[in-house]
Length: 397
Image (cartoon, rainbow, N blue to C red; front, side, top):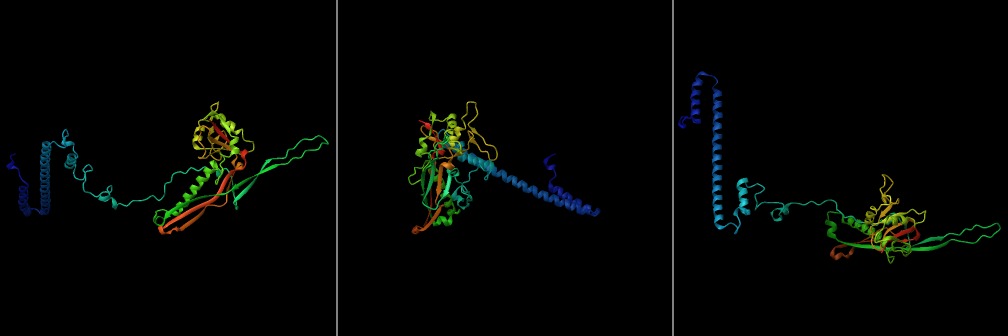
């Protein structure tokens, strides 16, 4: 059909008006015709708006394409970013290409001026941070010799520990014969408490403004420090103004067993060590975690391992059937080192406490700087009181 013969929307509307006039004269349903007219008018208005939007979008797309063509031409003339480089590989071209194809707010479109959290000056300062309500603390390894030793609390500076060395000798006698005389012998071990101390300084500002109870944290850290230090000295202390460690006690070291092989210990060494201790003691092995890892690899001639897992309940893991304690201050297995102890520490090693932990809060010494000093103190010591109750395994040089 020729384009001139095609009826337009205006022709349709005009025809409807004429029909309405004629129809009003003959039909009472003229209201339906009026509704149809209004619907068609609204549709026509929407169609006109859509046509305008489409023409506008086509115009913007054409303008942007013209700009891109001009930009490409200029870049091609100037050689792009440098010799041997294609201008289409530049960040600017890629950003513009993304902008044209995907719009301003696409994630790939670089934003030069925008408020954001990852840049302080562009708004990062305005974002509040949140602090965890607990301080994550590294593990502090403590040689828990207190858990197996004899612990006494005293009210004086020193404690005298009497030790019976021998008992009377009994002899069989014939009828009418006179029995011999005998008696027990004794010696005395003297334990003197030494002061263990640390001082922690903190500003009043920190005490008042910290998110944590810093006074409580200081007390806890001080207690951990004391436990770590005394555990170390109970193992390797020299005895001079400090506890005497069981691995350096000359009487215990003198009777140490020497391993069969150089710079290592074997299955038989661990077995033979148990035979050095008198029957009647309640022994436990003591070594560090690296030695334990090595001992767990040892197996007997029949293939059974030296280390045995415990069962649920009161039965614990054992080495050669005996319980063990991890004391990190014991030496590693090496040439001429003492890496394993085996003994009844409840009878062989005594720890004395004269006081609990005392705290002195000093706000005066550095008052001009508004610094508070917390001084933590306690008096205690430890010492071998029955040398025969503790046996050591020393690695052959």
